[in-house]
Length: 152
Image 1 (tube, helix red, strand yellow):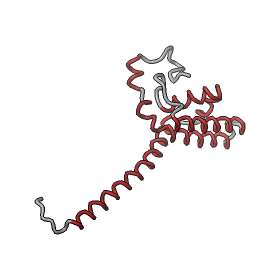
Image 2 (cartoon, one colour; image 1 turned 135 degrees about the vertical axis):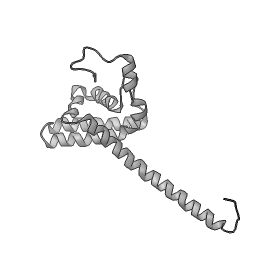
Image 3 (tube, rainbow, N blue to C red; image 1 turned 90 degrees about the vertical axis):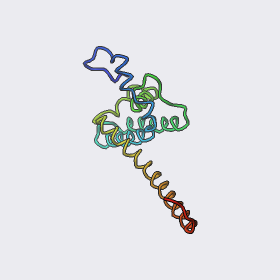
Image 4 (cartoon, rainbow, N blue to C red; image 1 turned 180 degrees about the vertical axis):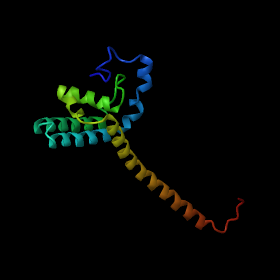
């Protein structure tokens, strides 16, 4: 499975491949990518692009891959360009060529944007909770030390 197929006779130069490789920092998006892929496969099934059998096979493989990602059994390798290519590699390993069927009708940019939005939602909620705890702690400490004279 190569991302650089089509009009190109070969892959990019090593320096270009290294520059475009993001899997080492976008791997944290893997759980979100699985969720987005499952939703997309369900949409492909509803629209008739995928049969019910094929959709169930892909979704089961995505769930299994998710479990392996959570446990650390499946992770990215040096040849994976990004989290999306790593997950696709995992699907191909599990279900063969059907692993590429979920790409139909989907923009890679939309996939990236949706993964990132879900990641931000989860992490912004945690960040907001931590900021709230900090503000509460500062308020409590200032009330406890209201009589302490300090410069500044």
